[in-house]
Length: 123
Image (cartoon, rainbow, N blue to C red; front, side):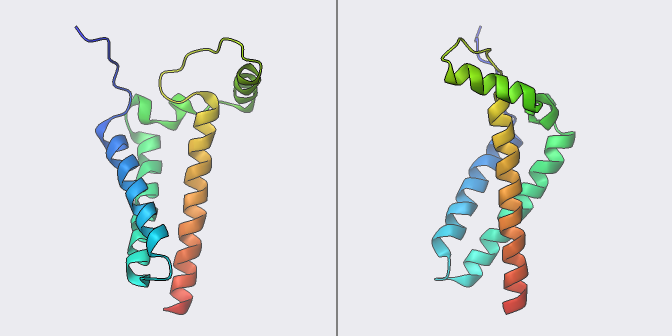
Protein backbone atom coordinates (compact mmCIF):
# COMPACT_ATOMS: atom_id res chain seq x y z
CA UNK A 1 0.00 0.00 0.00
CA UNK A 2 1.29 3.44 -0.89
CA UNK A 3 1.91 6.17 1.69
CA UNK A 4 1.32 8.85 -0.93
CA UNK A 5 -1.33 11.48 -0.37
CA UNK A 6 -2.43 13.28 -3.50
CA UNK A 7 -3.22 16.82 -2.44
CA UNK A 8 -3.58 18.59 -5.77
CA UNK A 9 -6.35 17.44 -8.09
CA UNK A 10 -5.93 17.30 -11.88
CA UNK A 11 -7.47 20.70 -12.43
CA UNK A 12 -4.94 22.36 -10.10
CA UNK A 13 -2.02 20.51 -11.70
CA UNK A 14 -3.09 21.36 -15.25
CA UNK A 15 -3.85 24.94 -14.17
CA UNK A 16 -0.41 25.35 -12.65
CA UNK A 17 1.57 24.18 -15.67
CA UNK A 18 -0.69 25.89 -18.21
CA UNK A 19 -0.42 29.14 -16.24
CA UNK A 20 3.37 28.84 -16.13
CA UNK A 21 3.53 28.19 -19.88
CA UNK A 22 1.09 31.00 -20.75
CA UNK A 23 2.99 33.46 -18.58
CA UNK A 24 6.31 32.48 -20.20
CA UNK A 25 4.81 32.89 -23.68
CA UNK A 26 3.36 36.29 -22.75
CA UNK A 27 6.67 37.39 -21.25
CA UNK A 28 8.76 36.11 -24.15
CA UNK A 29 6.52 37.55 -26.86
CA UNK A 30 6.33 41.00 -25.25
CA UNK A 31 6.54 43.67 -27.93
CA UNK A 32 7.84 41.23 -30.55
CA UNK A 33 4.49 39.62 -31.32
CA UNK A 34 1.54 41.57 -29.96
CA UNK A 35 -1.09 39.03 -31.03
CA UNK A 36 0.64 36.09 -29.32
CA UNK A 37 1.29 38.30 -26.28
CA UNK A 38 -2.37 39.34 -26.10
CA UNK A 39 -3.74 35.82 -26.46
CA UNK A 40 -1.32 34.49 -23.85
CA UNK A 41 -2.48 37.28 -21.54
CA UNK A 42 -6.12 36.41 -22.14
CA UNK A 43 -5.30 32.79 -21.37
CA UNK A 44 -3.62 33.84 -18.10
CA UNK A 45 -6.67 35.92 -17.17
CA UNK A 46 -9.04 33.04 -17.97
CA UNK A 47 -6.91 30.62 -15.98
CA UNK A 48 -6.80 32.92 -12.96
CA UNK A 49 -10.58 33.41 -13.10
CA UNK A 50 -11.13 29.66 -13.30
CA UNK A 51 -8.73 29.06 -10.39
CA UNK A 52 -10.62 31.58 -8.26
CA UNK A 53 -13.87 29.73 -8.96
CA UNK A 54 -12.16 26.40 -8.24
CA UNK A 55 -10.72 27.88 -5.04
CA UNK A 56 -14.25 28.59 -3.86
CA UNK A 57 -16.11 25.53 -5.19
CA UNK A 58 -13.49 22.85 -5.86
CA UNK A 59 -12.50 19.86 -3.76
CA UNK A 60 -11.13 20.17 -0.24
CA UNK A 61 -7.45 20.87 -0.90
CA UNK A 62 -8.14 23.17 -3.85
CA UNK A 63 -10.30 25.47 -1.73
CA UNK A 64 -8.70 28.64 -0.41
CA UNK A 65 -10.31 27.91 2.96
CA UNK A 66 -8.06 24.85 3.33
CA UNK A 67 -4.78 26.74 3.00
CA UNK A 68 -5.32 30.48 3.51
CA UNK A 69 -4.84 31.26 7.18
CA UNK A 70 -5.15 34.49 9.14
CA UNK A 71 -2.34 36.99 9.70
CA UNK A 72 -1.50 35.59 13.15
CA UNK A 73 -0.90 32.10 11.75
CA UNK A 74 1.29 33.51 8.97
CA UNK A 75 3.36 35.56 11.42
CA UNK A 76 3.73 32.60 13.78
CA UNK A 77 4.87 30.44 10.88
CA UNK A 78 7.39 33.04 9.68
CA UNK A 79 8.72 33.55 13.23
CA UNK A 80 9.17 29.82 13.55
CA UNK A 81 10.90 29.70 10.20
CA UNK A 82 13.24 32.55 11.13
CA UNK A 83 13.94 31.00 14.53
CA UNK A 84 14.70 27.63 12.98
CA UNK A 85 12.21 26.09 15.39
CA UNK A 86 10.52 22.84 14.41
CA UNK A 87 7.59 23.83 12.25
CA UNK A 88 4.16 22.32 12.11
CA UNK A 89 3.77 20.19 8.99
CA UNK A 90 1.15 21.23 6.49
CA UNK A 91 -0.52 19.11 3.85
CA UNK A 92 -0.37 21.43 0.86
CA UNK A 93 0.58 25.06 1.38
CA UNK A 94 1.94 26.36 4.67
CA UNK A 95 0.39 29.62 6.00
CA UNK A 96 2.93 31.83 4.20
CA UNK A 97 2.48 29.83 1.00
CA UNK A 98 -1.28 30.37 1.14
CA UNK A 99 -0.78 34.12 1.19
CA UNK A 100 1.74 33.82 -1.63
CA UNK A 101 -0.92 32.08 -3.74
CA UNK A 102 -3.34 34.95 -3.10
CA UNK A 103 -0.65 37.54 -3.87
CA UNK A 104 0.21 35.76 -7.11
CA UNK A 105 -3.43 35.60 -8.21
CA UNK A 106 -3.95 39.29 -7.38
CA UNK A 107 -0.77 40.37 -9.19
CA UNK A 108 -1.59 38.28 -12.25
CA UNK A 109 -5.11 39.70 -12.31
CA UNK A 110 -3.87 43.29 -12.07
CA UNK A 111 -1.21 42.70 -14.71
CA UNK A 112 -3.55 41.06 -17.21
CA UNK A 113 -6.40 43.52 -16.65
CA UNK A 114 -4.01 46.44 -17.16
CA UNK A 115 -2.83 44.75 -20.36
CA UNK A 116 -6.40 44.34 -21.57
CA UNK A 117 -7.05 48.04 -20.88
CA UNK A 118 -3.87 49.17 -22.67
CA UNK A 119 -4.39 46.72 -25.54
CA UNK A 120 -7.99 47.94 -25.84
CA UNK A 121 -6.85 51.57 -25.99
CA UNK A 122 -4.23 50.83 -28.64
CA UNK A 123 -6.30 48.34 -30.69
